[in-house]
Image (cartoon, rainbow, N blue to C red; front, side):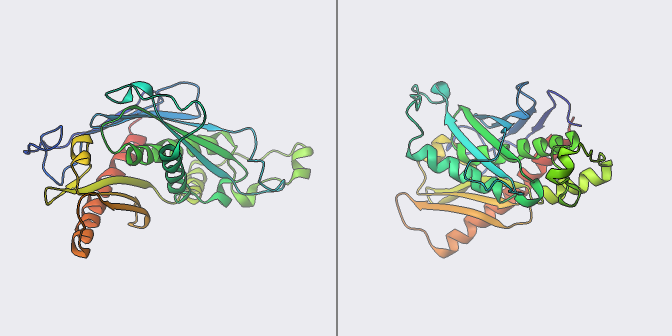
Length: 285
């Protein structure tokens, strides 16, 4: 069980460059800190900090599946919402009261797609989960930090749903008739619960920004690096090295296939460290 207020910190070595808000080498990530159960009401929640970027993630269970699902659906759904809070930027970010704007919608879809890439919706069963990512402080890489943080919160939520008996292996689920008759499902043993968690969420997903600034390749771009980047790329990957999404843009100049390969290699290398941090955060309690 993950204890309330469990905290995990990854300390990265310091850099030596004038670029960026921290003194670190090109290949080094910003410091990561994770605080579980940051709020009490959600199924799972955490405060995720990557450098000065801070994300509050909460996972909640809906009362029912989305309306567009068939009535007898046996698969679940993962929805995500993303928001920059008013005090998250150097000038007040205005609340989007009339619905999410284009950038926000694009990030929400990216986060949801990334999480669904980690989940077997059939094994999840007829459950609908909403993952809310609220940016408390934005210093670059907010969409990538949201995906990485959301993965931790989603796994913790699934672990708790299995423990509570709400997420049941497909072969053990009672029929509607059995439910009406009050048939109870035997609780899973610890080994069975761990096996089911693996079947529901077979992958961990991490995301990282990489880019080229003044001809140099950089990982984990903060705001200063991002705003000066000639090439900006967001890479979403599984722990096994599978790609879910790559968003790469030349801001001021084109980039070569060789440079693209170098950017991806840097992202994969850093992704391994992020995955280790995710696992350590979940096992820290």
